[in-house]
Length: 183
Image (cartoon, one colour):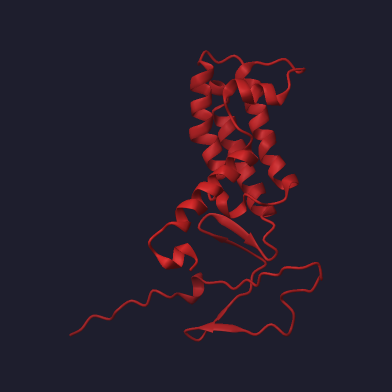
């Protein structure tokens, strides 16, 4: 007796999303949209879809993704607040290390994908880093954020993400696999 081979394509774990580019507002889920099927099961159309931890929307603005990441980072920052805060006995170097390992990694996961989102959306992540810098250094309100970043040797979130994106695409461009090189 031959055991049945399990089919890995599961229609109940699939979704369809249509990406639009342009300023014309057309409902992507209109009546003209065809029904997609897999193994005789309808595949539902979605406006947003979370794939590998990145929330994709039909216009690729990444607002929902950045909001979710921001809330997760704030959650971790609150949990680590006693160690990272103004009254903590930890050194600035250790506070910086904890921030980089626990909070910044949450905010910048898959950043090559969304690093070039609207600056206004990315600014919401920068605010979290600014607040960390101010609390970690116990800085007075009149000290500029740029000074705090310089003292803690932290680049802005936008710069960090763009540098990570550049490193990623440089590595991909010299990869032996032609599909990754794009050629």
